Length: 378
Image (cartoon, rainbow, N blue to C red; front, top):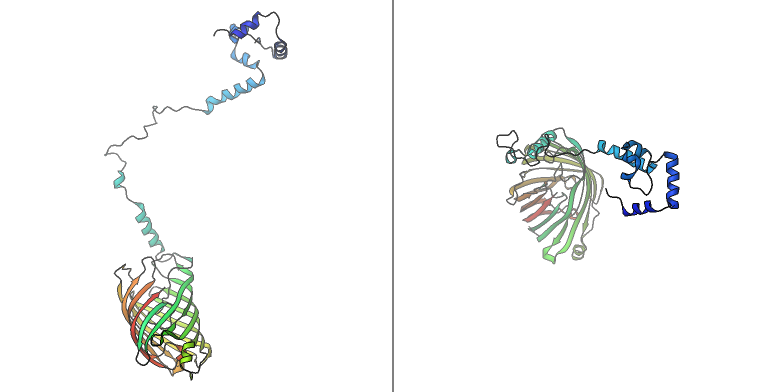
C-alpha cells in the first residue's frame, strides 16, 4: 500500500502537533502502543517486524478491542449455505411419474370425508346448547285455525259472503338443548309465539269485523318419531268498531283465555304426523270455559324439493267446552315449498271449514267457509 500524502507530509515536519503528542503520551505510555500516530501501519516498526495480530489489537483503544470481540463471534453465528451442496435439492425439481409422490389431480379431497365423519359423530350423541335455533322441534299444526303464522285466505261464507282472513304472526325458537346436527331435530326447545288474525269484510268495503290476539310460550321435546309440547298461551277477542257501528244491537263480550296445553305427536312416516292436545284455561271471561281438545292428521313431505315443491294435505278437529263440546273441522289441500336451508314452509291451496267460528268475538256462531289461501309457517 502506498503511503498517503498526508502521512508523508507529517513525517517531514520538524515538530509533531499538540494533538499527536497528547495521543502518543496517552496510549504509548499506558499500553505500549507500537503505532506511531501519523505513520501508515505498514511502515510502523512493529508491523514491519511481523508483530502478532494479537499484540497489535491489544494495544488499541477499548473501542477497537470490543469490535474485534464482536467480529470473532460472527463466524460462529453466520453460516453461508450453498444451494449446490448435497442435501439441498433444487426447489422445483420434478419427480417422474413412477415416483412415490402422487399427482395432484389424483389426490383425494378430504372435505367430503370430514363432513361425513362430523354427521356420523353428531347423528346420535352430539348434543349441546343452541341460542335462537332456526327450526322448531314441534311444528305448528298445518290446519290448526289458531296457530301463530303468516296467512292470507279469501273465503266465502254461505250467509255473510266473501271474507278475508288474515294473520300476522310467527313462532320462533329461543333456546335449544339438543342435537347440533341440523339434519337431526331432537332435544328440548323453548319457543315464543304471537299473532293477530283480523277478519276483513269484503262485502262491506273491507271493514274490520273482528280480531283475536294470541301470545304464548311453548316448551317442546322431540326424539325420533315422538314429540311433546307443554305450553302457556293467552288469547283475547275484540269486535271491530265498524262491525259494532253496522250492528247497533250487538253486545260486545270480553272473551279471554289463559290456558296451559299438553300435546303430543307421532310420525308413523317422516312425511305423516298424527297429533292431539288438551288445554285447560285457569283464567276465563266473556263466556269462555276451561277445557278444549284438538287433534288431527297431516301429510307434509320433509324433502327439500327446491322450486318444484310437493303436495300436502291436513285435517284438524277443534272441540271446546264452551259450545257444549262442539267445534269445527278444518281441511286443507294444496302445494308446499320447504326452505333449502331450514324447514320453513310456504303453502298455497284450498281450505274448507265447517262448524263454530274462528273469531271468538262471535264464538257461539256457526260458519261454513270455502276458499283459497296462502300460509307461511316458521
